[in-house]
Image 1 (cartoon, rainbow, N blue to C red):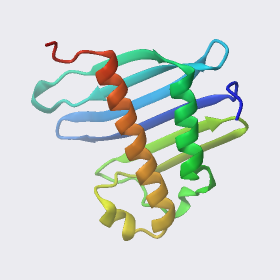
Image 2: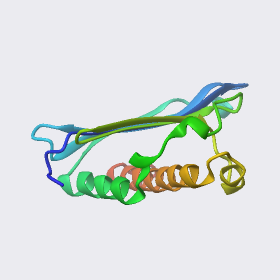
Image 3: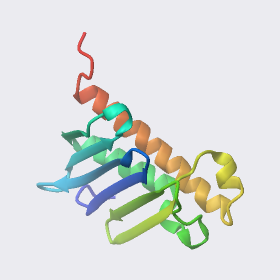
Length: 153
């Protein structure tokens, strides 16, 4: 795995409901020589008149390599979303990954719990997606809390 592999990752989860279009979205794009990445994060929860939260940051090659490693270890690039639950009134999730010469894009309904995964037509594939998304979200939330003091001490 060379540090100059083309790399792009985008995750979106959202729905339109009583409070308008509510969503969580983040993406990583390699910049400059392809070793570091720009990260964009947006969270729109109109609940109780919350406003759109946007954050942008740059991360080092170590973070980029770790994300590539997480993706490759998950083997999500071997999956196919054709048997996954379709988007519905509860919303949708999207995951797009460009890694080296591979490009894949997934779309599925929001997953409430592992019960939804187990009851799907492709529980193994959807489980891979579910756990990868959990890992990526945990990483992004950690990066945001490291980069931005939400509630200064």
